[in-house]
Amino acid sequence: MNPTVIENFKARSADGEEFDLVVLQHWVDTSSMREGRSKTPGLKSVITSDGLHVNRIDSQTFEVVERQLTVHRVDS
Image (cartoon, rainbow, N blue to C red; front, top):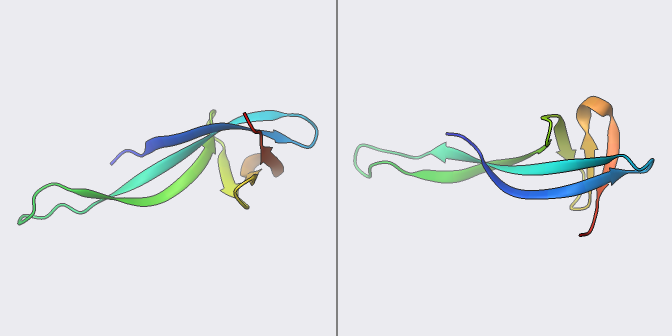
């Protein structure tokens, strides 16, 4: 099952570089012969809008893995 975009927000590094971060909700197929098709929420992941991997440090701080760069959520 394809993940669903559940949130978009901007984040900025200490040197001012901005990133658009995307939070994805992955789904687990829980379908059965008896109950039919169903799914349940699985893990969430964060990527940049251009597909770089992002680790969540806390609710405001993230690491863009391929760049080894710490970024902070920008309040809108």
